[in-house]
Image 1 (spheres, rainbow, N blue to C red):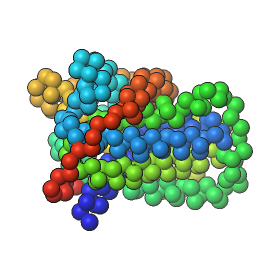
Image 2: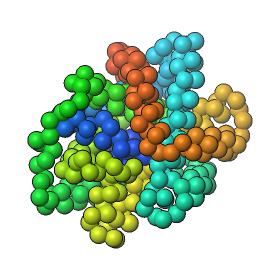
Image 3: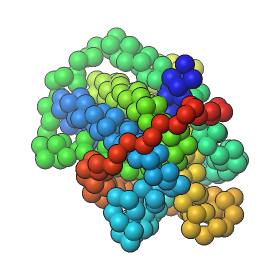
Image 4: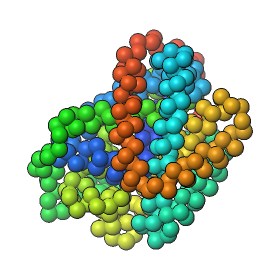
Length: 356
């Protein structure tokens, strides 16, 4: 039972790391799947298979290598020198992703809470800094609370969508974009999110150390991500093309359901953005502390300040520009880890104990 409970925690952290600003708001689902019409569900299934397969490989390989940060994993994949340079590039990419997360929080405040965009950035930065003082246990705890709520509310949105006049609209919308763009989309999405998740999955795999627990957690987490993708696609596709005008389209859908449900879902979107920001900043802090030996709190503060400055460009602009480009950069990483044939790690004598 303890091993199953730990696997569930792994799955929830996996889901919470991937389900960030772009995902929870609906912008990622729109960019990579919904805009391709009836092809969307099939593209989501392909991405889900990669999440299960590669998510397990990242965590199990990290446990075998006893990797302290994602740089150790990249050195294994690319070699000592190339791995260091790949990690430098990933550091910059992760900074860009975290800027998107922070900008997403600002958009939640400005679009749905009637507060200024800058207020959203500052409040989120301060809360992130305070929570990170608790380390990995804080990441486990917050995802254990937030992710089940997001899953439950996504199921509710699907149920409500079935009651709309055109619930099967997504089955009849043709793909008017390039078939090549549609075919590449699930690989870009999976490569980008999995490579960015290294910041959390690598230390998580090393902390757990048990291949069976990690593999089970990857299966549950990957399937959970796929289910959330399908529910978001279903809800948005039935309301296309009007829903595409929102920076946070899922918030626009929640607004249709009544005032209190709208507020609940907006807070869930914010919490999902927040969990990914916390997890990614934690991974970056570990990486930079390993290199510089500077104070972790100073590193965290500097990282958040950089994200604040980059967040001035706005959420929609950052996401639509950076995410596809980062996906292309991540394809090489996805190819190499899919070909890795390292033996599985030995099983620990006792299951790990993690405080939530």
